[in-house]
Image 1 (cartoon, helix red, strand yellow):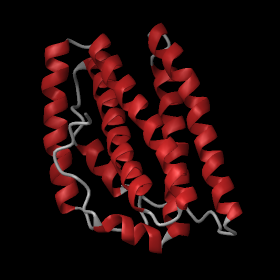
Image 2: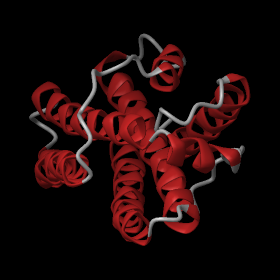
Image 3: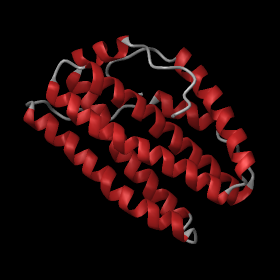
Length: 193
């Protein structure tokens, strides 16, 4: 369903489980950045009324996710650490096409958001299946479902505001590029991506 070309190395879950405070910290900041990305899209494209209407509740949902992860940290007597650079997202952003005007930039941003949500969904699925802690399995199952919906929404919005065949072509280019990123990225259990 997600179209990702390179699955996550299964060892990632074991590493994440050993670095629970780190992975929950990184997850919290990912949720915060997702909310901020939606706010930025709304601010940059207020005339895209359907997009604004669709993204406004996502802002609330992502912020709720941030709070849920904070609560999980507190329940486990763990601390929210400092935010770190997201090498995965930074590499994705390098692939964004420059130029193409405002409309072209919108499509690029929507596709980047879709890809981040797709990879997050895949990672949450792995956590929901393979963690030893039953509570965390359920916790991440809910996130997996949510991210799948967000991925779908961003793809649908890109098709709405762009030419569908060009969006499909560009999406395949992003998927190929993302597979190379995943191939070259160090496998770390303290990062969600």
